[in-house]
Length: 127
Image 1 (cartoon, rainbow, N blue to C red):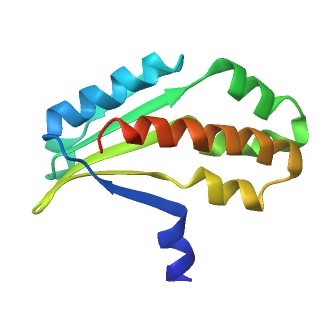
Image 2 (image 1 turned 45 degrees about the vertical axis):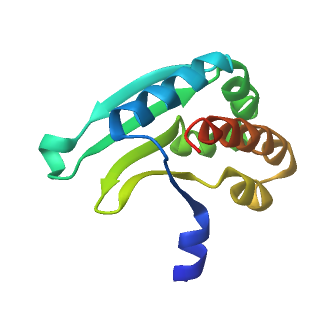
């Protein structure tokens, strides 16, 4: 079970300092035509340097939510990128949408696969 859980989350080490990593993710998101709809600095609340960035694209979201029977996917929306400072560097964590797409119904799999490609582009901004 643990193996499945670790596969569901992508982990990437940033080559940039913490603040620059946050800014690069936000800039790349906007460059790709997506929106940063939330940014939460949880450092004071959790005692670890942590910022969560929420991103969304109206067209992708609308397509994913078109059918009422697929609206359960809203529990996984918006897309989140967690930027965390660890002892050995800055890491970004996000859901592995490509893997999640393989478990979804076909019409959602198509959207999630496309989201996965956008996630990869966003992550590329910190590598």
